[in-house]
Image 1 (cartoon, rainbow, N blue to C red):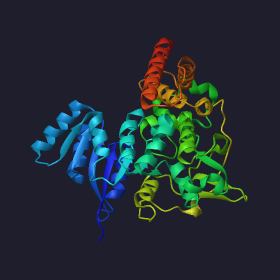
Image 2 (image 1 turned 30 degrees about the vertical axis):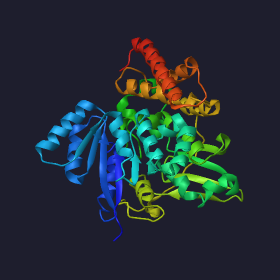
Image 3 (image 1 turned 180 degrees about the horizontal axis):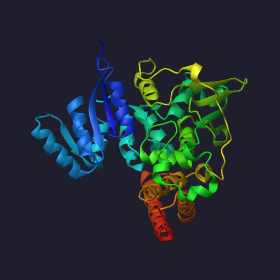
Image 4 (image 1 turned 120 degrees about the horizontal axis):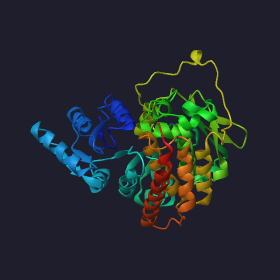
Length: 401
């Protein structure tokens, strides 16, 4: 039997982290859990440590790390606990780790994912913000560190599977690719009357018709900001010009994305809407392993629909494409403002339709800069969060239910 592959999961208590652990438990002969991390969810990370027996655990919140360490010590578990952003970065670069699942939601995942790239790991990228915020810098780190980058987002994983081997060296032109088609369900408000959207609740926004996801990404799906961020991510992952990346609304979430070739052929990747499928693909690539999911039953597929996205209904999609075309730190500004706005919406401090208004305000208020250093990105990220917070404070007086 070959040596086990060491896996670190950044964000193991989130939905992607939990799904990754579910896949890994079916393949303990191939993989070993070396490290698990969380923000401040002590109870769930403690339970994961009991079950999966990692060598290391890290928590972004130092106080939470202390509580975790105390509980593990009392239970007699020999797990080394690390704390803070430095702890997350250390876990991502451990010599015992071969694969890093980058599943921390939001900008908080940028630095540890960058550490994994610099350390030459295979990165299973679920944290799209690393590319949205710092696309050129992150891809340079991947090349310089000799890292492997495999996408976990169902759409980008689908595109990866539809592209020919060696497309990285040949480029999309050399591979005969005409277009990349990102599919999105349209979320829970695809058919909702527009005049009802301002009063949409967090519960309604998080009730995705097909996918089971965390609250933040569920809201991003409802606004289709998630798809906008994926367009930016695809630009860097596949070195694709923006005009070659299109979004198609596909309500059934069966076709996860498509690649159109110069000869008129279109290759599509299909499967049930379950994140364990792209996770299993990236863990074992270029081999295939069981994901533990149900297989697609074609007899139950009544129809597959495709629509052009409505920018009046989904202004966040328009804003994301504009930020991509503007370049520089504009995507980082977009992402930062969106994170602040979504959190305010989830806390009932902002109306659903004001998420896009908050992002647009930040893009107008904060001047972008060339992406020449990580410090520049982080500075504009901070400015965008401040601008968004100020805007939200002025809107909160309008009342949010």
